[in-house]
Length: 158
Image (cartoon, rainbow, N blue to C red):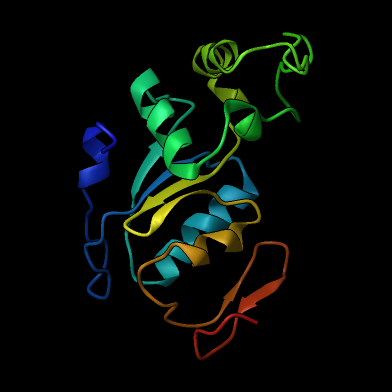
């Protein structure tokens, strides 16, 4: 179990929102992260939002996220818009531990958004990947910020 107090908390934002343990490791400056958050809310869920650049995951939490995603640190390493190249992190010689150390020291290197639900943990790129782990259906139509229609009026994937 991930030992992050926020993973067990949910709040109700509107009368139709329900309490379901969903957490998003979010960057509000990222369109993919914003779209993912909007899809979660389109299911009537108000998630726990962790702005991971302000509140990076602790080492045990990061390890647990990786384990639950069945992935390695390199798989969540963000290269674009980060100091990845300057830090020499593209080198295949680096161990998982060295990469975890870099992710903890520079949270901007963690690709986003990572979503935790009762059905799993996933790096949600593209944003509609969150639909695979949401425990509730979409409540209505949804169009991403770029105009791409993802969910129709009946709450079904397009």
